[in-house]
Image (cartoon, rainbow, N blue to C red; front, top):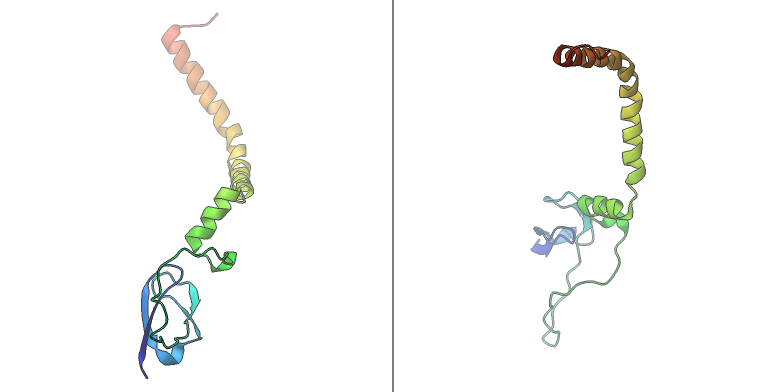
Amino acid sequence: MSDFKFSCPHCAQHIQVDSQWQGRELKCPACQERLIVPPTRPVSAGDPKPTASLSTEARPFRELPLWARVTWLVVLGALSPFIVSIAMLITAVLGPLAFLVGPVLGTFVSTRRQAAFGSIR
């Protein structure tokens, strides 16, 4: 079997596999994203040399790397409800503590104020 080299479409990591892996799915060793090993085609003398170009073809959301998916969720505002629900959970858990801390803190502040300024009356 001959070795076959290609780049990960997600992170551009160079990968080398046996030619028997062509057309099969595997995980990139660098970014852990799933990819399909591309098939090789023989290059004839008349074929132009491949050049790097930006692809305008849309990729499915699930094929994007994790950092790109999170970025899009933040940009589109889809994480806002998640962040609000986390804030509500924190408030629900810590809110009742205000009834315990409030009187103690109020007593402490008024005692310090009386010590500094004397009686208010």
